[in-house]
Length: 149
Image (tube, rainbow, N blue to C red):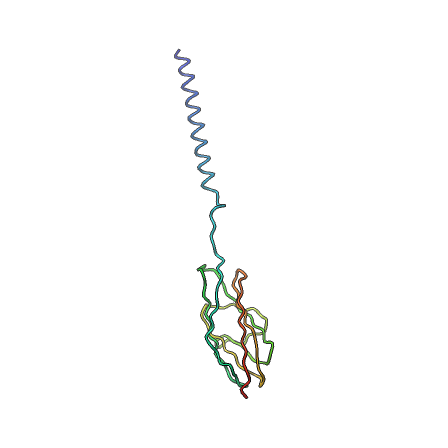
């Protein structure tokens, strides 16, 4: 009878160890599953531009104030600018930096900045500024100036 009790006790102990290991395994597997955890780092943005003059004379410089407004905040987002002039001639630059080359991509160091457009022609001028982020979101801004000569 004692031998039967010892066998029962050993079997019960093995069952207890098995259930403990099974419970721990299920708990660890469910804790390490990352499929349900989603971290958003791609936030669309808006671009606000202060009003600019409608007319510009040859040699005149126009200040363009731009603010990028994020819909969320991911600290590693980078913003870029490119521009293309399709009517007239002029130069576009960031503060005192060298003028931008059309269709080249430039990184923007801040989300609030000023661009300076200088007319180098006596005809109407039009150009587009494209602002994009490191996730492929883009905004287009079109500027049109009439000649005031």
